[in-house]
Image (cartoon, rainbow, N blue to C red):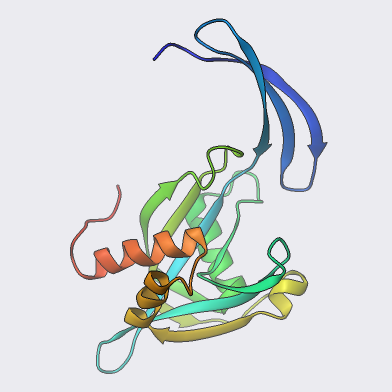
Length: 190
């Protein structure tokens, strides 16, 4: 494959978190073309695992209204990397506490991935969190003020991914990778 070149961006919209640009590019054959791109600081997602007295894993999930779909979606806790210079691990711990009221003594990176390569430069870091302690919730905005935090057996959450009941991409990826990790099939990304 030849080399593509990025000539620059023309800003269309400059919001609080996202910026929308029209990027101009040159293909290997010399053809110029443009693409609409959402520039993003990225995001984090956390798969928070608690163990009951019998040592069985439970996962803390949220049900949150998502305006783009006009419905409540089941998800793992997550959030934007909206504080400049904040490490993804710090964002993950902050978002976990804000959305669920828990903090974690152990945070392991499961994966970092590109959630939608055709439209954004966003990178999402997904973590496994264990050693949970309840510290109190600090919601931000109407969706978080009205979200439901709940806990279910981890195996049930994985079954919900397989059945399509959990369809959110970050949650699907996080839960399936956490399942592999907890079963000892994979080591954590370094």
